[in-house]
Length: 318
Image 1 (cartoon, helix red, strand yellow):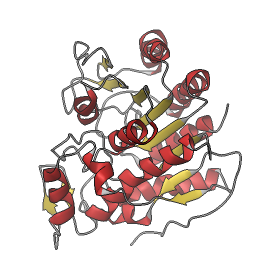
Image 2 (image 1 turned 60 degrees about the vertical axis):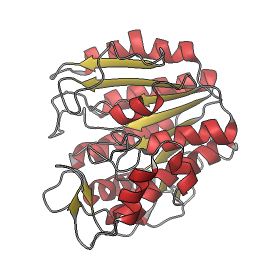
Image 3 (image 1 turned 45 degrees about the horizontal axis):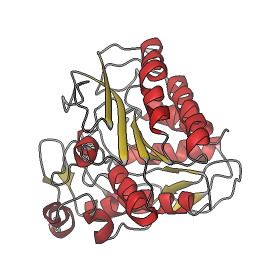
């Protein structure tokens, strides 16, 4: 049904990409916007733009790694349902026969990327995976998300490496309610998000501050480049700088692009490239350049192609 993902390659100038073929097997159904073609389009575009692209095979996350942020009940739902067809977990979140493996490898990609970056093997990585993760809470799969990939990666950095400060930067057009809920009482993790409001899941108000480690910048429908860059430059990037993270994790959703069918923000690929460049500079100041980025949303295939290439190019530039 889909082109297999061919692993290998070696372009020392370009950030390695972690992925797994099983991520294409999460079958959401013929009319679902979060479909396998999204990931195929990203991988295809990255290969075309970066001929020597190094694709690394993502391992499956272990139960222990998942249980740092998720309840046993969610693991049981995702891993032990063994559906013979597609079953809805809610109106837009689906479990299919291939979903368990896809979810395990999507979460495992972030863990492997954190290992590679913190062991000094590489400085930055991009995880091209699906299903996305940032809406999944400790106990509930929702908003197309089964496990919270970026939260699993952050918890791994805390537990395995003892990092005192990890920042999660979320520029997906939807608020990462799951990520925020998982870490809102964890002072070692800062969560910083810009997102459209009103829009699913209708969380992420400015007054949601956690322990002071949560920073939300809700933006109205129709927000364009100028306002977006202003909010990051004047409010969100200074908060990140003040926190001085030793690792930067990115929830890289590209659905604030003007072409996206699910939202009404008006960004283009250049805006994502600009912000990624700012995050690289920030990571260079505080974190030895260490960034792990994970694909979240983005539902127009053309926009996804352009934005993921712009994002990887900026991640690969010092």
